[in-house]
Length: 244
Length: 55
Image (cartoon, rainbow over all chains, first blue to last red; front, side):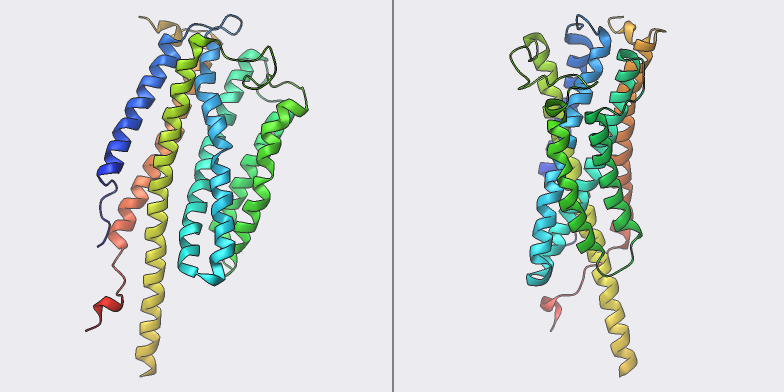
């Protein structure tokens, strides 16, 4: 049966719950959470910045895993490889979306907190590099016209994933401009209990939203693959008719 | 208003507002693009004949 609706019943429930969670989390971050002692209201940006940054480091692993499956299946089972490829491109786009938000909100915060939009700090630079790697992944897929594009993109994704642990560890390995880690950063690190609900709800809400986007984008890519298969089928049919 | 500080004239207030609006614009823009592509793809997709179609 052809899939014509964008949401099934589970998707519709997921969408409504996600929107409700985003509204609730935003309300907690903007109105309920206490004003931070040193940064003031600017700290409220971090309720959006940190969850998006965390998720920008998780979706690359979805892309990485799917790319490995693609490389494994591309000759053994091309249909499974196409499924893995659809997951890979969806995760790469969502990585770029979350990474863009991480960089934009970080710069808006930095301009007020540090007085500068940007600095070549280890965390900022490695995050920018990660974003550029996934933008180049998408550009490769969009612009390359060779028959090996999907394989090249999968190999690039494996290399891009190497940057993820570097971004994560950068504020532990090098102490430069970016604030020290709040979680697991030592005895003085941690979040005040009064801020935890706003932070936790924002992580949950934006993770639910990311999974929803991933599912929608995957469905779209599968449709595109079907359309390409259909075009190939029509070309074969036409060539057979000409041969007869 | 309880969140009137968000619409103040300081750089802090402006940047906080820009950050939240930027997130909604980027996320909403991407979701809107996926939705529009879905609608376009739906119009163009025809089911591929399979073995079950052979009589």
